[in-house]
Image 1 (cartoon, rainbow, N blue to C red):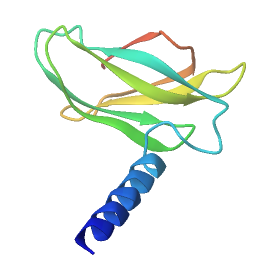
Image 2: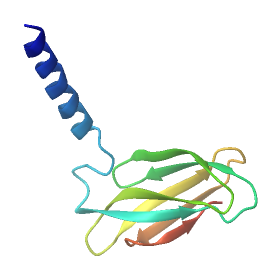
Image 3: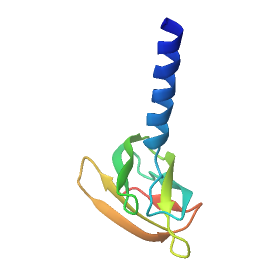
Image 4: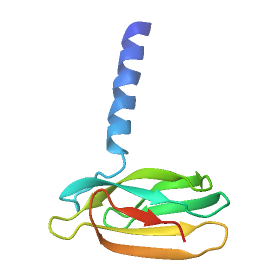
Length: 107
């Protein structure tokens, strides 16, 4: 009985994690990876919002002169649209038609 309960809970967890995986939505034709770069001397706390699938794909610290890879939803022939927000200063920058492999700066 305990084994069956464990199997069911594990299967349910896998289904939930697959459904909540970043970069999965009906609006996307494909997924791409881009790099968010912090070229500043200090750490930056940033939020990265995928505007095609309308979800936050990263929220956290990027160390000084560091970078973070994120997965974004993209449209065929148009690429991705992403908003990067500096959580401390409130500065935002929106990037449109982003292609896989792009490097995007932290504002």
